[in-house]
Length: 421
Image 1: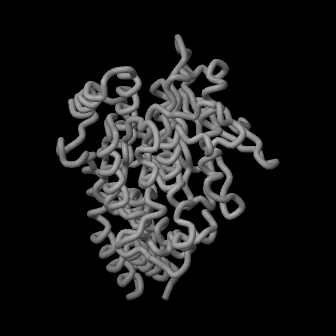
Image 2 (image 1 turned 60 degrees about the vertical axis):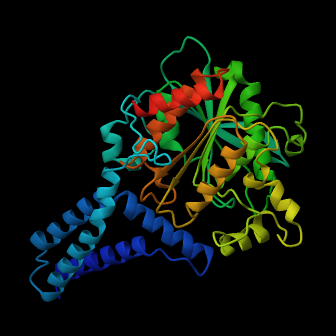
């Protein structure tokens, strides 16, 4: 077997394994296996078109330049690769056809009037948050807790503005154990910054060193810091929005629902840590939940490493940090909840239940955007699936900001107008 045939066979086998993992991601054993399998699946599902083009280039190079088809191994590799492409085609097709469905009414969410995402961002999604006209200030310290400096990055337009701008704070995910401001939320914050918002990407203390609710306490510290430094930052302190994905979605929802709970603001109880809008992505909202939709692996992780208590023995500790259990404990700001139906880490039912509960108690708009086929963390790069979501988030925030002080019915009606025109 020559080198070209061997490489062609390797390309075929690797492609088949990647597609098989995307179709049936591993659910264990062990957290590392689950996360590794999910991450590989997310890349295949969300970057299917890019990977097929790259794979085709490798196949052609091996077949033409390295005599990859001179032996049977090369032909076997070519057939396997072609089969993998055939299976992956629906992933790419579904991404191109993405429309945001909000509870099926209206059926398709059209954001044609929203600022567009540049074509080159779709072709080169690995550029993440880089965008002309947007500048970043990295590593501002917003708090020091137990000797640990907590930092944030600031993202804003280079264009001068006539007055203060509304703010949006992003909270990264990572099962409360890892992750940082450096690799999450970058496309969304850059898109919002290019359209007049001041974005803040924050870090917070992580488990197992940190114990819940220390994570959400840090999120509230960041909100209070932005509001207290509004003049210096050029921010309108009357409107701060909060967003985040996965564990960051949980913390976003929890912080938004507990503005009246000063016990979650130790040492800064008098500071204003309320937010005026919340956009959680694929969050975990029922830490104290039980039933068929509850993930036993997640329960063990939360018990052992995050809350550090047993649910059956101390349920009050879980209720205190569970967004589902905190609905109605204080003011509820407008919500836009986002989740993908292809999520293999957090079931989409988690968001459906959360939205239903919110709507029973909230006088403010509660919108739910469900992304057909979207994997967990589908928005980590700019793709044909995530671009419509970024545009919808911008429209939601802009309309909510413009409708401050209006009755909820008017705000909800205006949101439907701008999102469906």
